Length: 306
Image (cartoon, rainbow, N blue to C red; front, side, top):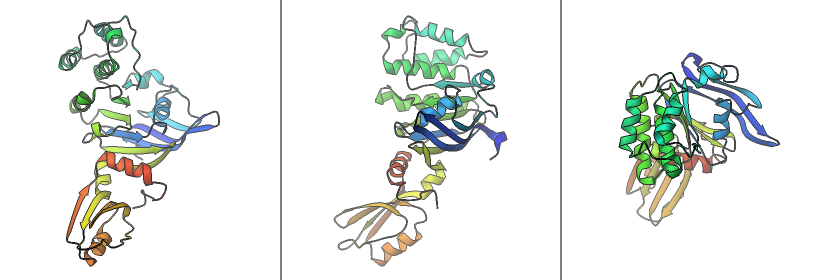
């Protein structure tokens, strides 16, 4: 690992709650300038890991580092360089939107008011509106805007689409993360934890998938797309039985067969060709499809082996 380039370093992290192991030996590294996806179903251990990073929970074993520092020992130094948006946003109900931003800005040495005003206008949040009158989605929008205004080096988002209107959440996330990273792409880093991945398609550079507190798959996005694929074949008669090691799942519809695959497809192509397939088609899987396939099939296949 090149720790000098790492904004986040996690080594053999364990976190227990009584007899329950919420996190079981996680190790990963997030390099500067990356948008890093932290994927998993509810209860996979994503939020627990993030809370250990932020010193909201203490690791049972292992270590976490932010900017090369121990967040337990250097909490102010680490938190002054990041912004965090949890899945549940707490706002004083009597505060207006403008007062909320003034309150948060008072804790920061830097606050981009032009960015604040532009995003409030774009997403139609009224500065004088009281927090108690806002929907859950509007409060999340407000928290996401507030996370950008200090222009932090690291942005940590935990289920940031929670409560957002489906019609605007993809646009909002693209605007938020896009505006944040484009202003200083080599130094702006994002860790986004979610089980709803579609909104982040095209933004994620690298990702890790958790299941039951363990890492089941990690990869650069482009590497993952080159390994996971969909292979369709149409045969002149009843489809033959094909047992290529690259097949993870398959389904048949008449003379058509669809394989979800992992790894080099040379052997599969040859086997299909031997059975005189009339037509074949190959395409990469989306990140969401990779997540769903991996989460479902990792116990039967070693998807990190190829």
